[in-house]
View (cartoon, rainbow, N blue to C red):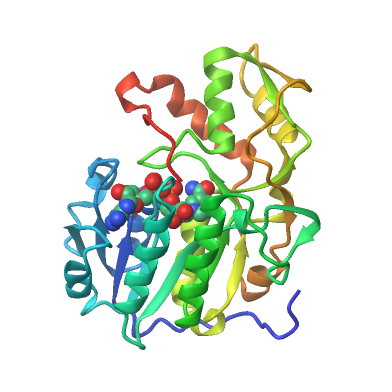
Length: 315
Ligand SMILES: NC(=O)c1ccc[n+]([C@@H]2O[C@H](COP(=O)([O-])OP(=O)(O)OC[C@H]3O[C@@H](n4cnc5c(N)ncnc54)[C@H](O)[C@@H]3O)[C@@H](O)[C@H]2O)c1
């Protein structure tokens, strides 16, 4: 617990218009309807790598504007940012590490000092760590993705922005990702029923997509208490091993049996538990547990047509 922090006071009375980069993605397509419900004007700035359909439920809202443009296009970016009060910066692509840093640098450089910025950072910054990570734990990413996300967070915080270090997100969103651990294992359980899990003892930490989106709305509304800082976003009750997740899935999928294998290795060596005391002390709480997320996934994944299944891994 950071003794300097007190339950935060809402301070968004001057925030009317919010631009969301990557607003049509997995996280964004859950967050944009929440922002509209809160009464903000919302501008989605996206190249629509995964299509625009995830936003169709909210296109009838006159407060929504859609801009099809790249954050690497400085001219369009500067124009779009001119009259917004805040930016939620989600746009990122795995496999393009230079882009992730350059894109973030463009966004940060285009901001005026009164504009708020909240950045989707990640717990992947921590890598493999003994004990429990707090925001003071030295950053030691073990993937290029984690490295570039940490670099982006640094740029944003230097501008007075907020870095939200998200746990691995799970659950259903209008743009569904099946490459995230809980979603991936649930999809495998539905398809294969029986499969091997490598390195089931690795500790990971999880966050439902609606709780993740709620974290950004929280930061937007309590910005002055969070400015310039990093916050882990998640809940200690969802610090689980991979095997814990597998057992939860087994309990919900008929005939499913996930066995632990000692013969293979997981390319992803992250092994860490995280403290969420800092953001909780301000008044944020993640509420949706992994079991609930699995139940939601089970309503959707078995009914997906093959052309609805995301084709490749992303972030
Ligand atoms: N999902 C997770 O578990 C998780 C965890 C931690 C952090 N994050 C971060 O959250 C952010 C959003 O992740 P997501 O899961 O929603 O990913 P996503 O791939 O579903 O969405 C990313 C969106 O960004 C857009 N985009 C990509 N490049 C762009 C560009 N150059 N200009 C404009 N738009 C562009 C894409 O079209 C897409 O709509 C990313 O920054 C990611 O690193 C995600």
